[in-house]
Length: 375
Image 1 (cartoon, rainbow, N blue to C red):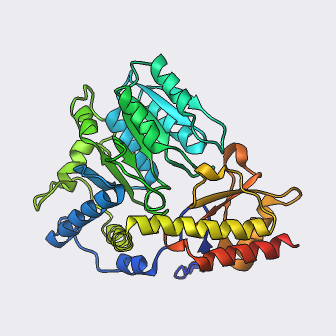
Image 2: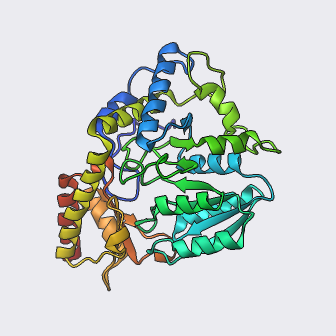
Image 3: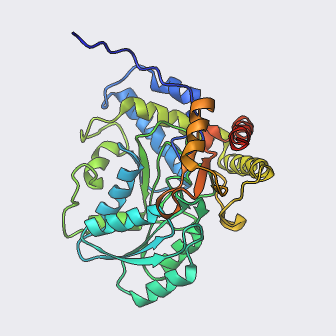
């Protein structure tokens, strides 16, 4: 008997977890437009605009600014494999899951991570970072997460980057959840290498990773003694395709339609403005905070460094984590996130990112949780 396969029609969901976030209908529309060849002159014009818009979003003039044709994890790897060589030493700050992923990348490059550990749910301690820099004068870089998605903590990217610069180190920054959601100033904060993702506060589809490298970082890449261990992520090769102007060297077949979507999401952010976008995320966070506290839920992270776009709340005693999230999904079509690592089963992570950071979602989330928790 021949199997029959139907067209996949996804259920309607409201995505308020740690990502992906709800995608703006304008971006879905852009995704559906006719595919062009990846060397088509019209598409190359779009690539140039994507680069300019990413420079705006990151607040940088870095020439080496582009989207890697893969998710944020590949953006992370592209930064580490291009900047690190065997024998290098890197100060790695960890106060959640994603600092640990940085550590693994450092190790896989044959470099040595020097870990600065802080309690999950608290900020990276600047004094500890400086002590590590003093104790390791041969360190090449300081790596840290700006917006720790696993905990909802905002680390002080400006201060840590300044410390790195003071001790003649590169700064490597994970901005996967921060880009478009909170203040970020790559040039003003002297950040050397940064990576992000499209599926968080940019409200784009998953699958692309914006990156940017400073002039100092580019010089480090040019001075390498060993080849970049990844052919696909080698910036010298990729920039033959993502460079400026009409002449492009074929490197890989770019995800053309996904880049239409990224262009549209960045255009929407540009039209709104960075400051208004950051303010909107904060205002929606305040509304969600009021609603959740009214039904007895408590925030874990100190207000002074709490992310507005990723809210971590304690699960009340006697409440079954998986059962509540399951009911929210099945009865309300609402997705919120579980805790990761040492916080699994203890917290929920509620996202208010990009297009999904609006009062309709705030009210829907509070009312749905109220209904489920009353049971």
